[in-house]
Amino acid sequence: MFSRGCLRQASRVSSRSLPIRQTIRRTTTDAAKAVPEASEARLTAAAYVATAVAVASSGWYFYQYGPTVYAVTPAEHGLHPTKYPWVHQGFLNTFDHQALRRGFQVYREVCASCHSLSRVAWRTLVGVSHTVDEVKAMAEECEYDDEPNDQGDIEKRPGKLSDYIPSPYANDQAARAANQGALPPDLSLIVKARHGGCDYIFNLLTGYPDEPPAGAVVQSGLNFNPYFPGTGIAMARVLYDGIVEYEDGTPATTSQMAKDVVEFLNWAAEPEMDERKKMGMKVLAVTTIMLALSIWVKKYKWASLKTRKIVYNPPKDILK
Amino acid sequence: MPVSSRIYNTLFRRNYVFVGLVFGAAFGADIALDIYADKFWDWKNQGRQWKDIRHKYVTEE
Image (cartoon, rainbow over the protein chains, first blue to last red):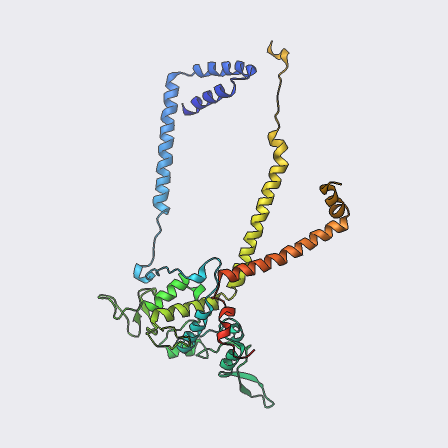
């Protein structure tokens, strides 16, 4: 019923102006009239049944495969981090380099006692948060293995700009042994390596409650932090108000230090961010101009085709 | 002589002039884009970049 009705409508509309089609239409309508009433009713019933089957099968499919099944409890998943409006995450914003300098100070005085930053070299800090002389002085405070001497022994030498920031432990096993089996992760790429990025790390650093909530099970040697998956984290709260004294006079509150160190770690993970954003800005500017030009060229080339008119005059003798 | 034919005669008529124009314009546009992108970047990030805080830490040049 549906399909036949549509066909009849369409043929009536399209063939109104062409006399030659009218004869064809007449034959089709005659054929349609010849269909008996019983067959139309059967067609309608078939359409209802087909619709019901389609709806039911798609419903069954979504019941079977649609809902997501979570294998972990919310506690095991960890509390979702609060979203903060990080200025440096704007499309065209760089890092606040004063905050990077403060963040490096926090890393050096607090985090560096357990966490390595093994993929960041001293030289990368030059012109970002410190001057050359400052970085050279910091590097020289550390000792690195030198080339073997004439007896083949490895001697120590003061660090250079090209050296990487030294790790607190010689290897992962030493780090585990010193931290009751827990490995403090390397912080070079930690912002990229954790879901939630900056928000997660900020929430983790500032989210330690004074004491675990009633009913929460905290294993010995672990600390309660709702943002950490599983809520039991080996790292204790480290950022307390005033634990660091900033050289630029910024009050060193817990959240200020967490914000600064998160921004610094974001820089460590994405030192190329400025170049990336600048390049994206240029690409968008150029492609916008190119898009406008190509639209204009298309309109220019198609103008003659779009405005022409094709007229068909049927031969007179075919009407007889 | 109308302006259009003067442009044609000076710029488009000889191929080496035209190709030179294309390459020169490409270089010029790229340099100009870089300069203005950097200017916009510096304006958007006033006070946030290292060059804005550098004077606090550099003792002698």
